[in-house]
Image (cartoon, rainbow, N blue to C red):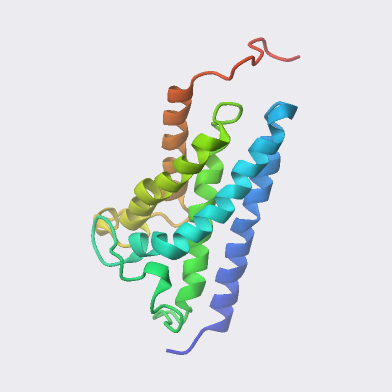
Length: 190
């Protein structure tokens, strides 16, 4: 299959644009916290970018897009065998991997808004690792990876379910578990 240069450029540009959302979220959420927690908020977002990238390459893509209805398998661990593959649409598979990886990165970055001033770094690190593997990858498989929801007609072109519903549900659970921000003013500001 011949590589379609235009489609490849578009997918890579789209991946870059989604990736630029992470620093944007970091700055936006940084404005929502007290000065003493600003660095923690920035680091939580940028850490998501780094650790989810590593997880996606090692096992995430394989779990989300490997064969299977509920969850993928380990056929593509470490992106094994994907470096020369081209999809039927003429897109290099690694370009698709990079594009999907950006959604895997932005989803936990969205969750950081809910944990602002609530969760410590030592708790965030294992949470993001486990959540990315145990929650994000299966949900991505169900819809983006042709899993059981996709087979029943579920469509998600822009990440409404995989990204936003997934992040929103996780954020709600975390807020309910962690409770209110400590020492946060309860009166509305003028």
